[in-house]
Image (cartoon, rainbow, N blue to C red; front, top):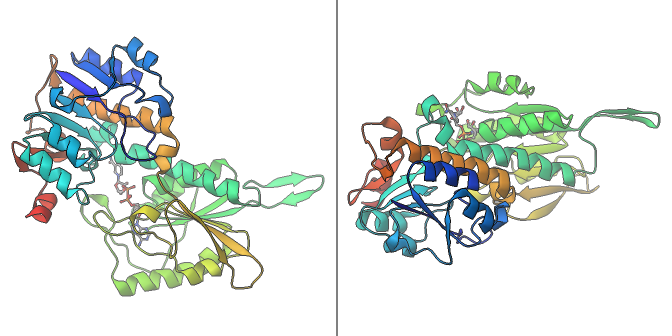
Length: 378
Ligand code: NAD
C-alpha cells in the first residue's frame, strides 16, 4: 500500500508527520512510502535523509493515488475530498472545529483516525500525540517566560550578593503544566501550581512543585479530565488565586477542559496586580485563553496597578511547531505506532474490536464514528 507524507499546508507549521526513523519503521511494515519534497526541511530532515531511509521523494503528492495519508494539522477539505474511497488517514483532526473536513472524509468513504481521540490508557501511551505535543509545549512556555523575565530563575549566592530564585506559578497541571513545573524546577525556580483535579496535588509534588490548595471542591469528569466550573465557582477560583498570582514573577497557564473554551483563570486586574517586569505565558491563548487579554502570537505590555511598569503577557501560539525537530520526532512515532497496530504484511486493516483503534477512528465506511462529532454534524 502507498503511504504519503505531505508538506504541511498550514501557515507557520514546521512539523512533519514522519521522520527518517519512522519511514524505516513504516517501510518495515511493508508500506511503500512517498514524501513530498521538502516536507521535513523545517524539522531538520532533508530529502536525502528520507531517501536513505527508504522513501520516494515526489514533487507533489497525488492524494487520489494514496492508500494512506499521514499528517500533522487537520487536512484541508479539498485534500480530504481528493482522497480515494477506502483510503486511511492518520493525524490531528480537530473534529469539533473542522466539521466540513470530517463530512468530506465521511462522504468520501475515507477511514480517518484522529490522534486527539486515541484513548488515554496505558496501552496507547506510545500513540498519544496530545501528550507528546503537550510535553513540548510545556517545556517551551517556560523558556519563553525565562527569556522575557529581567531576572534569573535560579538562586545565586555570589561575592557581589545573593539573588533569590524566581517564583513561578503554574495553573493547570496536566501534561503541559507538569512539564512546565519540571522545566522551571530544572532552571532553579521556586515553583507552585494549582489544578482542580483531585490527583493533581500528588502529580505536582512528584515534579518538585508546591501544590496550592484552594478552598474549592475538585472537579473531575470521566476519563480523568477536568470538568468545567460553574460561573460562581470560576469567580471564586479567580478570587482565591489572586494573592498567589500577585506574588509570582512568572505565571504560566495551561488549563483546558475537553471540548470547551479554555477556562478564564486570571482577570486583567489580577495581571495588573503583579510586580513590574513579571511575565505571564498563556499556553491556552489559542483556545480562548486562561488570561484575560491574551492574544495568540503576541506579547502585550499590561501596565501594573502601581504605575511603576508593566507585565509582559505572552499569548503562546504554535508552541510545539516552534520546536519542530523534537516535536516531530515524538509525533511521528505516535503516528507510526498507531499504524503498526493495524498493519499486517503491508496491508492496513483496522480491527475495530481493538479499543484503541475503535476509539481513535473518526470516520469509516461513509459514516462518522465519533459520536459527539456525528451529533454536531446532524
Ligand atoms: P488538558 O490539556 O485537558 O487540561 C490541562 C489541565 O487543566 C488539566 O490538568 C485540567 O485538570 C486543568 N484544568 C481545567 N480546568 C481548570 C481550572 N479551572 N483550574 C485549574 N486547572 C484546570 O489535560 P491533559 O494534559 O490532556 O490531561 C488530562 C488528564 O489525562 C489528566 O488526568 C492526565 O493525567 C490524564 N492523562 C492520562 C494519560 C494516560 O494514562 N495515558 C496520558 C495523558 C494524560
